[in-house]
Structures are given as C-alpha cells and as structure tokens.
Length: 239
Image 1: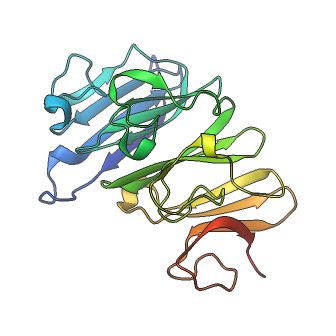
Image 2 (image 1 turned 60 degrees about the vertical axis):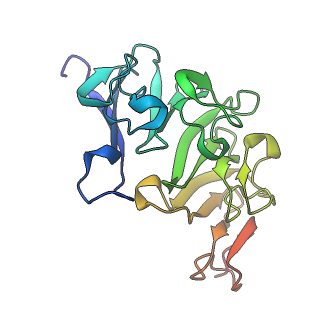
C-alpha cells in the first residue's frame, strides 16, 4: 500500500517431506515503514491447523496479507513455515518478540502459543539484527546487540552460539554470548532458514581488525587450519 510503504519482505519456503510446489510450507511477512506487519501463507496442521501468524482468527490458509494489530514498531523479522511454523520480530526498542511453535528453545524452553511473547527478555534488550537459521527439523536464531555481542537461541548442534557450550541440544542467551576479544562490527551468517538445513557457520569482523569464525566446518570453511567438524569457540581466520 502506498499509504504504508513496504520496508522489507521476509519469508520461508520449504518443500521438505511434501511434493515440490506444495503450498503447505509457505509463510510470508511484510514489514511496513510504519513498523506494522502483514502476513500470509499456510499454518500446516500444527495446533489444529490454525495459522496464528497470519490470522489470529485461526484459519489454516491465508491467501492475502493480513494486518497483525497485536504487534507494532517492527524493524526486522523471521518467519518459519511448515509443521513448526513460528515468527520472531525485532522491535525498534531493541527487544525481540515471538509467536508460534518454540522449536528447540527458540523463545523460552518448551513454550508455544497464539500470542506474542518476549524472547529471553532478561538478556535481549538492545538487539539490532536477527540472524535466523536452520531447517524444518532444527531452528536457531542469532542476535547481534548494539554493543557488539552475539547471542544465540535454538539448535546448537555445531556450536553456533560461540560461547563454548555443548554442540548438542539447544542453547539460549542465558548461557552467555560468543567468546570474542572485541565487539563485533559486522556478521556474515551462512546457513539461513531458506537453505533448509542446520549447518551454520558464522564469521564476525571485530573491532580489533580480525575476522573470527565458528560453527560448522565439514568443508574447512572456518579458515583456521583445523579439520574438526565444528567449533564451539570463535578463532581468528588465518591469512
């Protein structure tokens, strides 16, 4: 709408376990410049087939974008499609909110529902960017804060959190930020949601002038002369 111009489109399209082209694994969201959001797509069969992201009234498929009046001041977002459909938004005040299936501890352990809830509110208070990743069977999200710290929630099977934590199960901001010697100035995140897998590698340019990497390393993508499958702790890229 020209009365509320679009700032960004976010989406997830997945054909896992269904025929290619199936509409049951599609979810889209428009973020307007005003901070309002419109969503459409399909809510699969989770929780009785309702699409609580696109339509609070509870229809399965929403064919045209619908305004979600429950949330505002959105500047960034992520949506997940399919059986584990969920959405996460970053608001202008630096807080993160989510709705839907809390797969792998994305929001808070074992929580899901039809209302927007704050995401790890004790730790995520000054977020500037979301970095969602993973596929149908393992979701995660990275959070870059204004003071240059990296936090992670969700799957941590390849040490994506960078905090030295276990590489199995899920991680949470409460477990600490990535172990870096200087604030992050820029992140490159390999393995976004639409890549359909949970093999994330993270590269962070830091204030000390070094590039650090951690996460998945099956193809030696970390760049620091180590053939281990993953790393839970950042190390400088060697050059």
